[in-house]
Image (cartoon, rainbow, N blue to C red; front, side):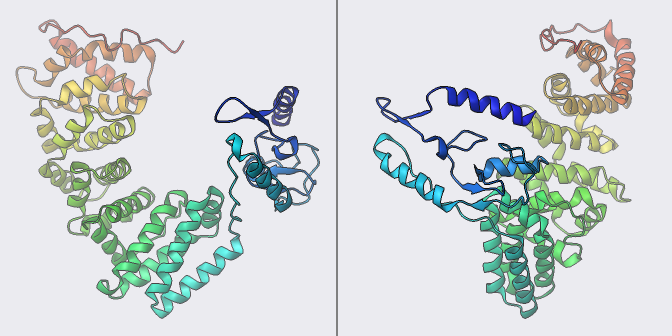
Length: 441
């Protein structure tokens, strides 16, 4: 099917005049057909030849192979080797053609860097291990910097680094230097942490940074004044915590870790750091640790409930979902619910998020409303009355009509029963939040 589609596209493109228009728009330059990739039909930037003898652009043929194909897209013959061979002759011809037509706005394609091989990566690993044994900070720093440069150079390099276990090597190096004198090794530890921040999102191993010394160092960087270092630290912790509950317990025992995470939300340095901090806090408040109650109470005392509600007013989708998840966990505790009861934004924000952000945000919003309404003990109805005034009753009815998961449906049904008791006593404010909502059938 994919071959057929590409061939149709190729035939359609070749049927007309294939031209690149110059910047002036007055003159058109025809691109020679043998300079075009047979798959993308674009000018090749990194021509490589397969065992079938056909030349493709590296990016296009690698995507084809990564999709599970083992045949040549043009000849449909099985490829004897899946390793592409750089075609320097064609690449040089393309570059010469670009230079010859530079007056028409054609830019010369840069000479592509050869992707790193697994053998080269393993050699770097060996050198890093040797540097660690010798305590060679400068040597290790240079090698880690080289790894970071390779990872940023291309996605293919990044995949090669992950496949060869580079994150594990860097993690071991971090642990080795963290066990030695921390003050003497700050520079190399900082560089390794930066490398881990690049690689860990693509490597889902769970055994990294398992020692107390290494986690102490990561949290030390999390509390530092350097913004990029704090960002790297929180990104690394974000990748470790969801995969290993022991990391949550280790964080709880490190002084200042919770305050540092809170600070990243209160004084954000970038969206990725804010999201990472929220995700870590979510796993902390939802953990099964015996100290879970103390965790939640500590975050409440720091002012997290008010901060989350203020963020939720105009947060983008991902941050909104994570903030609601944290608030849902906090509302499991009396102290957390008390703060929510006393904040003017609580009910308006929660009701507004139903049907407006995503299914996950709606699920959390309903869950928080459920916890607040089920535990409301004030004689005047408190949040129940306010929820009705904000049209929560109508929105929950719509929720049941358009569908949701079973647990959310049960909570919505219980909420409707609770709200119905006060419904006749309250004047509702007209809402147009869901007037254009359509059923999925």
